[in-house]
Image (tube, rainbow, N blue to C red; front, side, top):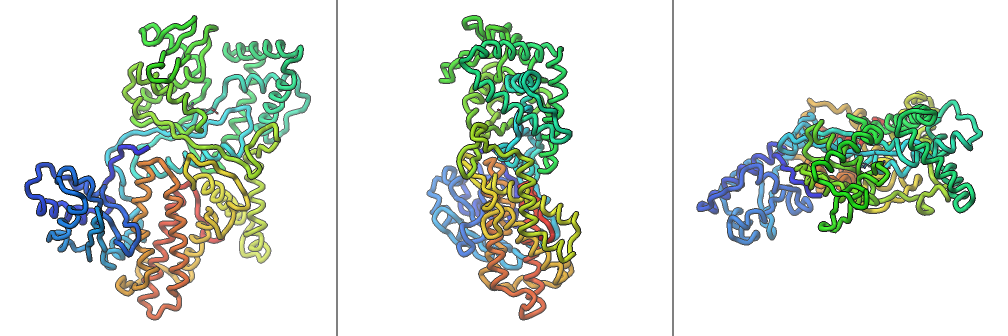
Length: 596
Ligand code: ARG
């Protein structure tokens, strides 16, 4: 989704260039009525495709309509204007097709950009204008089912987007909506009470409960078509009724077992360093959703079809959205209509984002249409952010294949592997405490899983592969953490501090300039990730940054630089890279250990 997010001018360099452009446009097109304002000009600034072509590019397309000239001609005309020639931060400008490319002076790049990064101010800029309230709903696992590695994609994506949006200046609420009612719950409780003979374990009850659900499903499957089938169905209906009426032994069992699942979710969230501002429950909107939909029916906004209530969306090619069945019960969509109403009315949100896998696309189209037709203006700002499935190297996960990897098992397996592969040697030579090793292993596992889950386009399938995701020489989270840790130890060894005397003019190598220009564009990349609600570009950016740093480090000696000044300047550049890497990883929800 390209949201209509308005960008602000990120920093002084952008502001000065936008001002110069403003004057240049006045000069070149004095007769123009409506001139673009600074913000509009600022949002047409972006990074040039490579540092040899420029450091910042200005796109002339948006001017074409008002100036009545082709973008390349506009670029040429602006190039001639004095304000651009005299702008102190611009060393050189160059027209390249529809773009005007600017080269900054080393002084500017160093003092304004790298300096700002090193003192942290660069990360305080608000990237988008306005203070709209947004809400992202993500990680909505069902209770009473297995929490597995597939659930991580949603969790990691939502967590990163919330962090990126907040960093950019969005007033963002993060919420979750676990599915704690419905047939899956009834099946699990049914099996637990009528067929299970095992005692629940003392610990990890949530995972065990997930197994019970899987067993319930296979038993029901096995008995399909046998004399038990009808009886099973009747029993499940009776359980659902008890849950609905909120009394009876199944209701009590539901209350108790739900806690087990929630405990497991909380364990996973705490491991992943995820927090929600609000937990919505399917059970909490269940009864109110029926009341609300009945009201809508009375108001004449819904129709009756064969005894069932819903909305005819055939004009919009969305069929009939069923909201109350003939037996008087609601459906998944019914609850979503009520949930959205709650979100709009209780939180006053403008943009309403749902991160849910792509199999529910039709469902959300229907729900959003219903919301629109019953009169919610916010319906146009509801957005289903879809993503594709996670597979294992041997194909899709399925309970029948028995290859579902419970989340916390995977996590401990991964941390164990990380310790063996990278960290146990520090225990052996006693340079690290056990606690340090454990904490670092958790950070690296977080890095591997989170980066792996969000580095590709949301619509592309992912194959989870522990070995690949842990590689220190591939496009992985641990690779980026490793780059950061190397920089941290370098800065410590060479005593980096703010008072070092630097001379940016002393940097002359391509690797140095390329790195500086890359750092300059960090905020740009985050802002466009927020506009598109995508994480993959930030992931790619950090990977490129890591590679650029490595070639800088290989080609430009720091400790052994020819002069003290050059050494300090390179060290300051390395430090800034570490800062951006750390901040970038943090926006993806990944902590960066100081050593690893
Ligand atoms: N619990 C649901 C599932 O596992 C996802 C809920 C998505 N959110 C929503 N508002 N419908 O399929």
